[in-house]
Length: 587
Image (cartoon, rainbow, N blue to C red):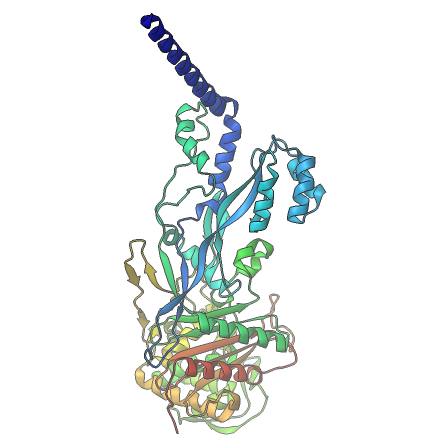
């Protein structure tokens, strides 16, 4: 009797075991054969979803150099600029969705047209289709409560820029190359490999059930043409920028107000530490919101500070005078007779106001911004030496800044052998520079003649916690410290005797403006109402803490940069003096 009972139990156990085995085999067959395409597309959709590849991407931080009584050189704090953030999104498996019912219900929750949603859900061949992103908690809860077949609320990780448009040209954004998320423009591009690490985190948030199926699917699937993605989890490194959050914010406000005041087409502001080459602020307008980069034209992503060129005009006279002083061709008190014009062949070049000023010193050439004086200084220097100084200051070549897409500028006219090209270049016409090249050259004047390599990333924080700091690099010394001191004195006189609204009581301020016509692509220049204004200056002049460049494109209703930009330079310089807690340098 007991044998029959045991036999019955064994038989029952075997039957149950066979049933479970059959169920497992059926389930695997269903997943790998019957529903293979559906699940493969779903998993691929999740893994190839550009936003799901950002879990391990490193953060980007702004610096904070604000001084305090206990930390006169700055607090050393940092503020988040770019990070990864999880948002809920809705996707559908349209083969299982009742499109009419689902569209009607989702329309009320999402606030979208019912016909639009139905047209999406009617695409029955779509087994994975994203319907809505960035859902609120309330929307997520309501959609989940519907328990509508084929609709799923999941989580995704997206690149998030908490300050919206702030420093957008410096940051760039994370876009995609095919199905792969990559950094585009700015440091997101130039440091893409470092931010991502050697491998990308591809863990699925909110859909881990499907990730557990991957190994089984890979083993059982007979479809070798579409291998499923690997799961890797090494995180990228963090970046700390030289860009100061507070200075950048202030500069963006100033530029926005400036452009609105003069109805300008655009503009840029750069603030640089002349002693190290570090860029403290880099602002350009129009800008964009990297959170919504798809809403902008490609032209918005170009960083005018490093990717566009302009003729600098009279601000280049500082470079001409630097070469003349350094070569010994002139001294600050060297004189010439300004007749108001210079003739070269069939060309006649005049001062900006078409006036003659008589006997003038080199110091007065900069003070009065005399084209004829710049031509005199260049002539004394000689064409070959002048070209060497222009190249020595970094023009006609990339600065090496750690931002992608930098252009070299254009000084090709100086290699043509035509004398007229040297004459016009002496006062900043016929050559093209980037704003970064121009401010970096002025930083060399401020830094006792040493030209530094500009840089954007202050340090890299490795995933193991170690820190790699960027060390300043000297690119060269185009002029001596003696020439630098002479030129500083001359540029201080320019501000003291010409730009009352750029002056700051108690401080030595150096600077020079430029007003240049805009070249016409068909030859010559555009009409007289279209100019580029720029102002470059530094303070304190003899112990400089910062250099500022302001550039404005096509302002309306004002002709000269001395009138449009010197007040803004003064406002920025006063802010920076207070910000860095710089003591007065004069009575």
